[in-house]
Image (cartoon, rainbow over all chains, first blue to last red; front, side, top):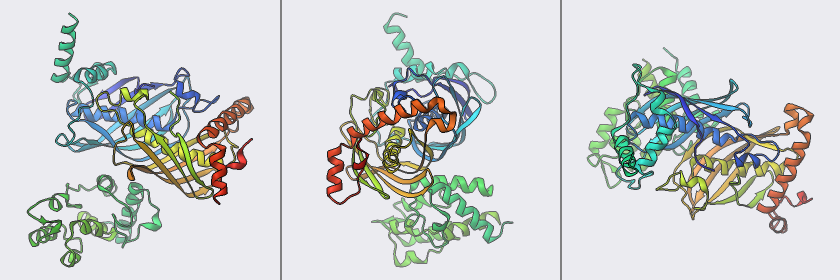
Length: 180
Length: 127
Length: 176
């Protein structure tokens, strides 16, 4: 099981909102334990999908220089289950953001039906005390790019998002290393 | 302008939501930390919900004065000094701070903030 | 990877509470993404451990009558500390109330006696056939059988019988 709970972004407006999708498939092995014979997408992973949508929206606000982690889920209510063959659509709205963290209001829909609504709080891990990086720069840049953030991403004024310098450097170095 | 009762009901609702406690537990004398189990991340949540519920702005530190309580100028050896007490009175005119004179421990201050203190604060903001 | 976020049930008090253990191993493949340079248990899997602990309580309480046990509402899920490979998360859940098939628990996960995660969880249980018709009845039956097999692994009959001997209510009567 890899830790990607959104497949791609379809909308991304800096500092405002983002929409991402997650396809549910029987080839995902955990569905055969949850539950055997009657696969339903676990609601904890719906929370993760919303958190990844909101967390990357929050992270992009400071050009992915802050490390964003889940701090609190205030209230997550679930109304139905997502099943194999269906697509979950996550929407995160950035209610508040500052250097200490962010607050988002998130929803999940499946086949246009409200599946979940939640309020999710993120914290920026303190740069002074947390000396362990989470990713290598190239790994993180690759993940963010593969989710199409820079392809669909826009500023509130409608301009395309710029790729942060530290991502550009990491990707350039990696491409040079393979003679690209 | 909302009545005292309306303010209490909305504050109660915000606390029930933020702290996942039942209405019966949120009495005016209940302390946020001691009785209702609030932690620092919860204060953020509470402030956010109050802002939305009352359409007010709560500047950081105005309701929960973390900056004063962690400043060496106002707190020595875990105890709020006279300067600190004066600063708190200035920042929090809505709260009953007499208890600090008897017990200046920073930890206990945080623990003594009550639901009624919060209602008093909101009343000053919506006036 | 199996979606089993509980390795062992260690205590069950009917009508009251349940305690279980989740040990984190570096071999769990999602850790390579979370995070490559700082592997820690994702917060939502800590939530899932608490959810599964509560779900096992409900399966025992309802005597495995239902195939599906799902999270209906999660409130005030707070994270205090990370769980790292080599550590164990001890999950404790105390029943707060039960309204029909809706069970509400206060749950927390501890590492080395320190609270790492806490939440108020409400779960519900049902058979898929109740929602979507008799077509699903054989699948519900298959599910219940499989879940019982898993149950016997994580709360072995010997442990349940020992608990019964110790005067605690156990799921011993569920042995089939």
